[in-house]
Image 1 (cartoon, rainbow, N blue to C red):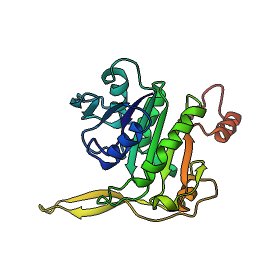
Image 2: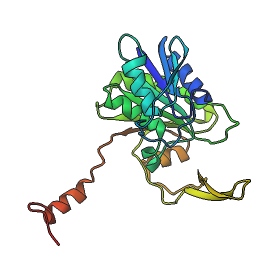
Image 3: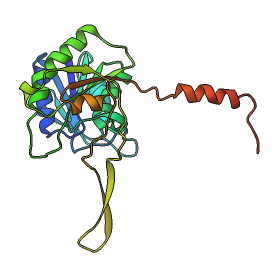
Length: 257
């Protein structure tokens, strides 16, 4: 199996090194293409207004000035020589990618780009945001087995797998749960107003560490209760009930004021 590895935390991230070890546990044909700098929150951004530069760091290791989406596209089409990858792994993200945040996640976006290009994609994240904690023991312990099993059973072509690991000692993690995407009932994103050394105001975007009260079966609930969450995601954002209701009142000739 040929695996392409990417992320959104950047080429020097400890989580990427952990993911390389995970990939190497599955195959010796591992390629890396990741952003030169952190691209958290980049979602599916594609660099169109400026050039993307590629730096070769090793025989199968590259960094780019672009986004996670750029990295996967370049990796599959330009940088991985010979046959295309059989699998793209993205992560291991520092911090979980759950609920509505999956739409902003560069980690998830890299897996989605792989899917869009016809290659199975899996996003991997681990809870915990401490920048001084470079331990990815839960992901390294359990990801190889989960990935191997997923590849054995397969999944639909329009789906990516989103795996989240709790930040717990390995021996305290005993369950994997297949979950649905949850939605928080608290607002965790915020902007903090600050002043620079020249007296000018600016804002720093961030997250509050607040927990919601999620329903059973959601990715949030599984992770809060110490289970590994595996969520199949797809990018069809159509809301079917609203579409059917609209068809009753809006259709045919366009209305005029």
